[in-house]
Image (tube, rainbow, N blue to C red):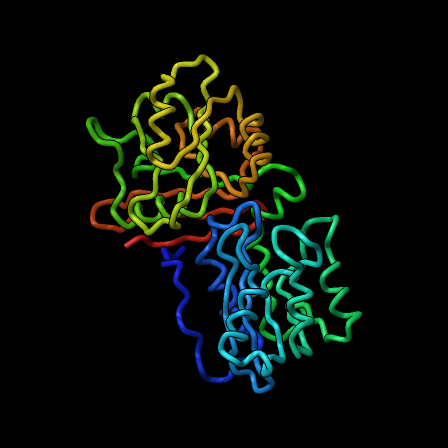
Length: 339
């Protein structure tokens, strides 16, 4: 779980195979996770016939160019669009008009002959439409799943759009839970402290906030800790505002506290229950919500099976580093040492 600066690095000059190009596109897109809602996070790498990178870009925020259009615009500006042969993109290009024109049209405006797609569009209303349009136009459309060395990268593409897929198919955002435990398994910090984890663990926690469109918490956490819920220990996306849902059935959190949250770029509201809060956040366009709350709220989320990713940050014993255990629904547990 890196903490990247959104600025894209210069792409490599040496020829790239399709797997390497797809990895470049994934890395580019990952830098903007948490900035693109309600649109998916997407990266695109353009190659010439020899495999050299012509352009690399990612979708940066809603209303701006999609990844394919951005990369093609880069190539036009550099006078290299005539070299475009292969379009490598993490998500199936769109074939409909929204706030921007279809990416299929941008691709068809180039001499591209091949398109490599990391993941099919999860929206059942449009899935396959972009790939079909390009194939009917005579382009060779390849799914990354079937390419040598690309199966794991295709999994990475699907993981990248998991929040978008969740909202597209259920109307609710992807739910990530963050839980910190001391060596005894307690979530309660020592008296007078708000946390017991290390600086690397705190950077991870703020990176999780950075990629989320909303935070969900409970009234007990607000009243007991007066948390900021803003992104501080890693660079945030410029100008980013998030929503803050406070579970507060009894109205214990003062209205003034909710109003002050606006100064931290948070649009706060109360909700009676988790389901209602998730419905409201999904309707507002949130793709991912980070749950930062006490044991009672976390128990409710677990009991109702509402989570998609559960991140447990465990305090190390003695001089041992903290570690994070990341569990995704239906997947294996990933362990990270935080040092």
